[in-house]
Length: 525
Ligand code: AMP
Image 1 (cartoon, helix red, strand yellow):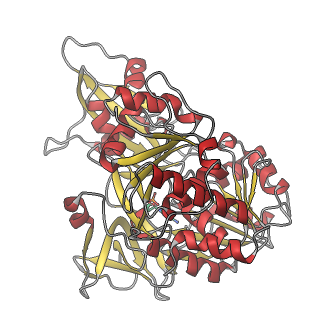
Image 2: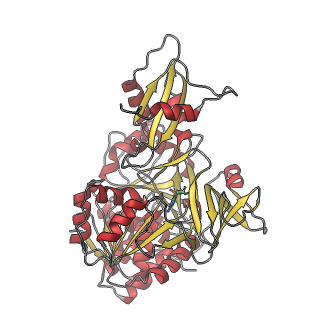
Image 3: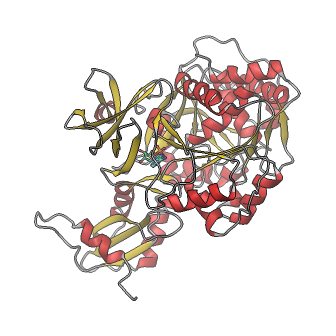
């Protein structure tokens, strides 16, 4: 298998002058030769700062060409990068940093306040390298800046003892502590190999880079683009869910591939931002991460009849995607979700019922095996052992927590979750993580967080009901503010209910189905 930084090296040797990365502003551009040279310089800078093979390098920066170069530079140093959501509160990021123990943090100006917050959280010995001008927060000063890196020779240090881990991706954890999924070079390069063959990605392709860098979907954009010698167009985070500007981006950049979570496609369809036969350069449109509602898919397929549409499915623990479904024609029945399809090369999808393969058509729990499987969660053997288990044929498989069935053609259909993990705007969220945060707010007696499908654009709506301890006062606004300091914005409940007592079932447990109903608007209301 190829190491990920070598995918860049090979393309840089083949076509040094081709454009590799185009920044969100459309102005900043790096050719393959330039990107390659920067990654060597960054590797040198990291090694000079004491980064050794296997060490972690935290990355707290906006998605720009230099940030991407810093990820690959980390790999060249034989180290492991940890991209962190710099929009998360310092308390949560501090937990991730404490767990990953990075030797160096690479940051940009967008993260200055956050790094200050980390120092305030007690992380006082951080070595911060700036990807731009020197950073100086209230409590820290950057140890080196972009100009220092640019002054170095573009020769990476000798490649000895590189780590097979490429990066750690922290996802929401049900007990309130984010889990670090360990991703190896082999896992990503196996998927990239399959994807290049399946989609026929070629030099000159213009590929979207939409997901944030802490989402595993972004690794597909980066490494498949670089392996193909294509152009990666980083989508501005400021587009958010602005349908018209997103459509204009696809049109103006003449993208040949768009890949995002479904909510973006839903917005564009609902705001009618896609004209008939729009985006003449677009060849394929891919989505992953959650269900794309079939009426939305049908709308896109009718508007863009020449485009190929592919549903990709898979959890971070099994790398980007494990199965695919090329939608053959506009779905006739819009009430039926499209399948998640068949395994990508080297992967396997197994539906088990009581530990045995479920008969054709029967619902069971979905497990994944094969080349995409992670070695497990960073420094958490217990969680690793609980999620990565032995299958009926003795193979190592990952318990997805998804419900599925396999049809007579061997095609897999996704049917929902077995637990309280939800997706909102593509973000993977454990409701337990939010509950843990709510419970830490002084004055809360009891709380429950439930996901309710209210038919909105963003998928599941996060709803929180709580009761207040005797003598305490806790208005919804105070509660919202307190919780927003503990979890990222996308995890803050959108709906709140203060109750004297939470509803209980016969076993005395919080009755979540009843609670979910309480959040639904009443008929005629
Ligand atoms: P993540 O680790 O963020 O990729 O989340 C993985 C989970 O997202 C899976 O276990 C599924 O519950 C859900 N998921 C991913 N892709 C799809 C898809 N194409 N259709 C339905 N659910 C999906």
